Amino acid sequence: MQQKIALDILKTGRNVYLTGAAGSGKTHVLNSYISYLRKHNAVVGVTASTGIAATHLNGMTIHSWSGIGVKDYLSEWDLDTMMQRQPLVRRLERTDILIIDEVSMLRPEILDMVDMVARALKRSKDPFGGMQVVLSGDFFQLPPVVRKTTEEIFADTARSWCEADFRVCYLTEQYRQEGGKLLSILNDIRDGEVSAVSRKALQERLLTNGGYAEDPVVLYTHNKDVDERNATELKKIDSDSVVYEMTSGGRANLIESLKKSVLAPEKLELKVGARVMFVKNSSEQEYVNGTLGEVISLEGEYPLIKTKTGHEVVARPVSWETTDDTKVLASVTQVPLRLAWAITVHKSQGMSLDVVEADLSKAFAPGQGYVALSRSRTLNGLVLKGLNPTALQVHPYVRERDEQLQAESRRWENVFQKFSKAKVQQMHEEFVDRVGHAVSQSPGIPTHFKTQALAKRGGSIADMAKERGLTKATVLSHLEKLKDAGEDELLEYLKPNQDELNEIERAFKRSKGDKLSPVHKLLRGKYTYEQLRLARLFL
Image (cartoon, rainbow, N blue to C red):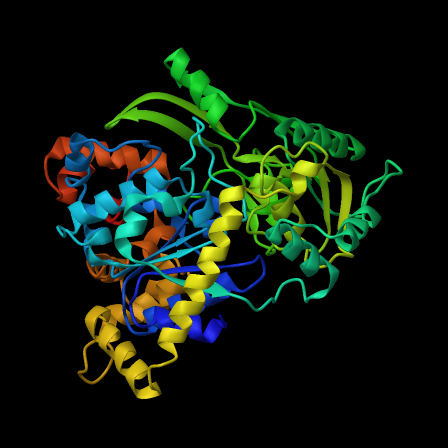
């Protein structure tokens, strides 16, 4: 299916599963649809199964967006508790369209939990509370991580998938690899029969002299190999290093559990010139989990990082916590970085790279080889340090399901093309009328929408006030209106750091209200009224 047809089907408001090979333009279609929806003032939740995948759409993880967090199961008590969280309730109530990218890495029970939350908080018996749901991904990519081996590990086996009646849009045009041998190899892997020509082409990319490719992103299947390669590269830098030690507090068993679950090392050794990756989302949206960069200075108290986009960020320590309601049971604190000359294949999913060096000699799961190979834009940009038979395998279920998905896509394309252009336009307009939130038609733009435009550019409150000639208090009142209109995600970059937010939240609870003056007194003037008012937006 062509991208234009898929986009036209999306605009009708039908639930859609958007799929296709790596580089077929799934993210482009999603971004185009998101722009279309926002142009028509529809409220869209933009999410993905992982933090890195979410960065490609400027969204958040579905776990965070839906409020389910790391839960494996939702009890009635959990749902009741979530219904008391007003920011979460407002988010769900106002959302018209939910997008979940990289759904291949989402376990079926997670999708069912999102459905449960949406029905409960939107007070609707319809699948996903009546929202249009757009899932995107490719089951040939890595399957979800499961604690217990079961046959039903893919999202399309979820009850909610069946009930939502998804239209399949299988994109067939290729944009990333520009055709050629690499595309043929990837198609062979998808077909389950790698030809002699493709095998020879891969053998020619094997680096057998023990050397390395020039300035690559290195992919391994195991964390141990990643750590060893990063340590080797760090030693090559002839300069002094600085070590940052993790600190902790709380129950010993919970601390150990946190240390195993967070990606930041207990002892982080850095040098100027080291490649690094952020391993946590910034509360101020300076970086996200998966942002790559380079250490450019260690002269200050904390490392200064220049990201791939050229943005300079001081990597200050952050905390990971285990909580029971508002009580912190355990926490660990560390600079949110790890070395990143090498990363795991799992972490690379969704990236598009110029030079890739992949060691697939220890591939152990179907899909690992396909993901690693498809990170490269061209065959010439790919170097292999090893390749075992497992690397070229795909899950038997995936190959069989792929044939069904292609057939479904062709069927829906044939059905859709029978509609006249006028009928398609009518369906588009009817959906926009249903989900679009009309902007005032009176002369001039409401003043808080002008502030909204500045917020979309990421301006600080002081900058917005200065540019508009307003007081900070007036700008804050505009932000409150935007929050009430469901623009929570737009304001996320203004969120105070978590420690400050926790302290202010506890004070609001002690005051048993939402007025600023009692909280200001309880905190003995530690925060200004403007800071308290801003924090209140995120409580």
